[in-house]
Image (cartoon, rainbow, N blue to C red; front, side, top):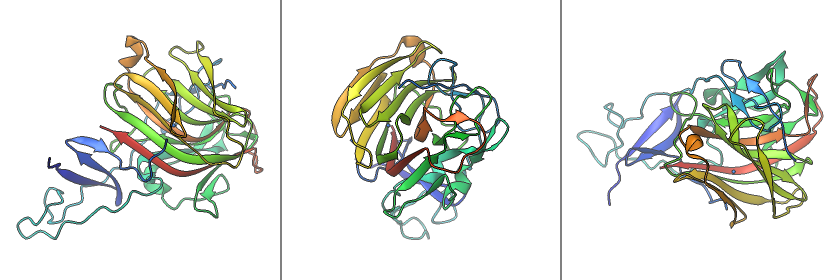
Amino acid sequence: MNHARRLFACSGLLISACVNGQIHVPAGSPGTTTTGSGGSDATPGIGGGSGGATGPGDSDASVGPGGAGGDIGTDGGEGDVSMGGNGGAPAQDAGPAPPIDFSMWQLQLPTGSGTSPTIVLPDQLAGFSNLYFYKADDGGQIFMDPATGVTTSGSVHPRTELREMSMTGTAAWSSEAINTMSVTGKVLKGSSVTIAQVFNGPESITLAELQYSSNGFTLFYEEAKGQGNSTKLGNAVPLNTQYTFTIGLSKNVLSLSINGKPVYSHTPSSHTLGSKFYFKVGNYDQTASPGAVGTTAHSLVEVYKVAVVHQ
């Protein structure tokens, strides 16, 4: 079967391929994405606050710019990469997917002022580095969270976390499709850290949070704000030990596997399934608090690879 393939650019950065009309972010190596608290985000462009006074969800009430660019064309035409069109340049292979395709993410940091955390947009993220977000010596991406930092007005925990974006703004996908996020990483420091989320945008709450502790993983699930529940998943992984996981909401089923082993599956209510969703990944420390911005690492998460698939 022949698949028409179109390449897109986001401020000059290659972000995805379109297969049969569906956006697809190619994977690198396949991955196998306690209670927390959150609040609401009311600041324009904020990439993922935390929602609910009693639940660990995130509440996003804003849309940040996606940094989309024009299509890449080989002949100055519509942007289709062709196999030898009229006068066009030879087709070019996109090459292997980067470990993290920063052009499809927006970063929220625990810095900023008042209730406005620092936001790094997709077209600024490649090559960005500071005390809270930097490359490790082994090539992984470090997400550092201090014990206290800036968060949005209703949030309980500051974070260093990536929020999924689309070519036109905030990602918003349907649960009826195939939607997965596979991550390879490890926690270097921290006692209760959310490392991935499936977020319910219109409802302004998290649907699912994958939380790490050295005693084992926990899945926090929430369909209504303040009415969430936690499921202990076991599969304990010591600090500084690599893991892989795949979290997804596909064909109306929320599922999670850790190190290649299925550990959770649940079908949300029909009301929830009618919403729109996006992924988050990084370090959302459930023991950090709002306050003066700290410069000492309270928790450290290292991420080697992130592969998101929508089809």
